[in-house]
Image 1 (tube, rainbow, N blue to C red):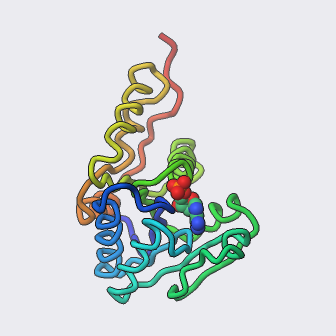
Image 2 (spheres, rainbow, N blue to C red; image 1 turned 90 degrees about the vertical axis):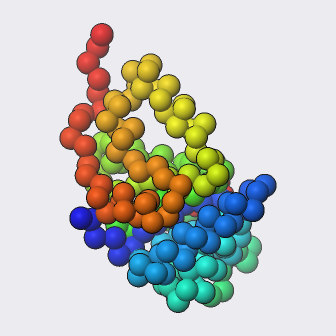
Length: 194
Ligand code: AMP
């Protein structure tokens, strides 16, 4: 079993067009508080990030925000966090999140969320880190994305084992269980030429 005392969550700085997304973010925040898992995240009060942090803090959970100077100056920092860091760039921020987190979860979001998730998936694939990662598939948001991932497999740009190295769940407890049980694949990234 993997020790998950701190998990980094990537998610939208918008709330999405359906209340189910904010409900999902709040569910995840509450289950972090219930399971004594520290939240590492972008540090803002905006969008799903705000809904996640609010629910976690309401459940007496612990949140550590890492925000860029630029976003801090715009007033985006969530005022209720137990800890925060202000860093110079988004790149630096991702590095700090990777250092502090035992695992990663992406909730629904936009290009920022996807970029952060894809980076940690790639680092795992290349063996630079070996940390569990998963998608919280609220309202089937990631179904079209997984269809595209399957297309990468069909077209031989991705080994199928690497598809199964991420946990995709629509229930927060199952997602956390999947991350605890995660085992890194030893299948190499590079496929034989056919
Ligand atoms: P997006 O999915 O495009 O809304 O981008 C969300 C991701 O980018 C989050 O996981 C954050 O790390 C980062 N991000 C974007 N906007 C903000 C913001 N206002 N405050 C903090 N982080 C942000």
